[in-house]
Image (cartoon, rainbow, N blue to C red; front, top):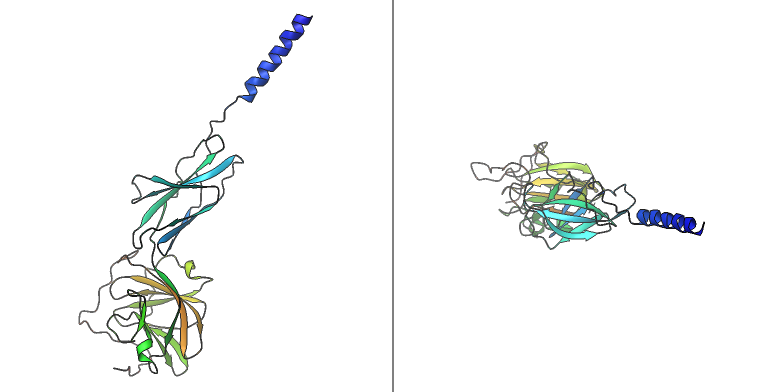
Length: 267
């Protein structure tokens, strides 16, 4: 009897040990809904949480091309990551993997994403070009306020008979993208829909996209206006032609504002 009990106990212990040492070799699913946002010398990545309860964290991979070699740049337990210190104007591709507590790692996320970091600024104020012509224009390439009719000015502010406008010259385009909750709500330039008058009405909370004369894209979001000035935040893409096709300046090289209500602009 004692011998039988000992054998039975040994069998139970052996079975228990066998269950205790089962090893999980099943990796998590690849993360989904990856999203990349270009910032100033940085790119922010976000993704959805994996459904598996044993997920321990996520690894972020980067490449200089969609089909290029992806290199591990970070691991995190969060659902976001900021790749800081990247160069403005250089497009970077990203993928994300998930790993569990046993060290099993998923394949790269299927929705590989990319973004191009770009400079940005806040609280820029322009004056009406008729009363303050030297501080009515903005040049995105130098991040500076200047003369409304300078050769490098990308847009300028106007109070025309009590109505407020942002204007661009005839070698540049502008479009009102409507109300946005922040500057980051507009991710890329539109392919069409530019204002034929090259003027848009100033509306606080609206974001506007500009296609500059030298083939760059920029966006501004109006924060406030008081009739005499307009205040906005901006972002500028230093990579020419990104993301859309190249824009050619007028053949005569002249810059004229084509308005539905023509005005005599200051010389």
